[in-house]
Image (cartoon, rainbow, N blue to C red; front, side, top):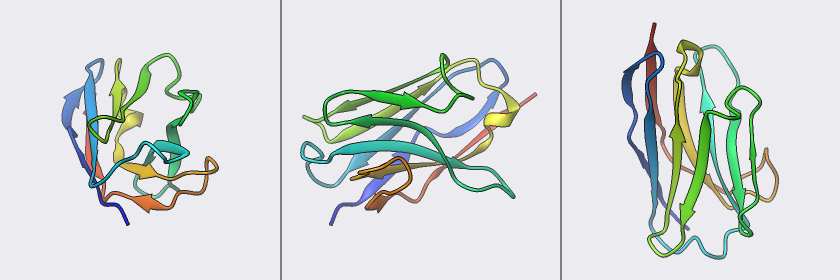
Length: 118
């Protein structure tokens, strides 16, 4: 078992930036992939960014070029930096671990709210 705790969400103006952090309760070194997902009101949860154990990344088209996922295996943490935020980025952002595919993860955090005002 592993617990994931997200932080760094909040209210930001359009065009601003945020850095989300995800702290894992134990080593993430062996996880095949970590990811960030988001769910906006009335919409399905969607992948934002994913990084596998080898460091390969993939991003949703909607955030590509504006977001960077990174992981620090020594600190058991995963980060998502988002720039040029748009109102449509407003959602609850979830950290996920042990994700063998982009749509399947073994562990989820409780989420952190990101609200982008226009």
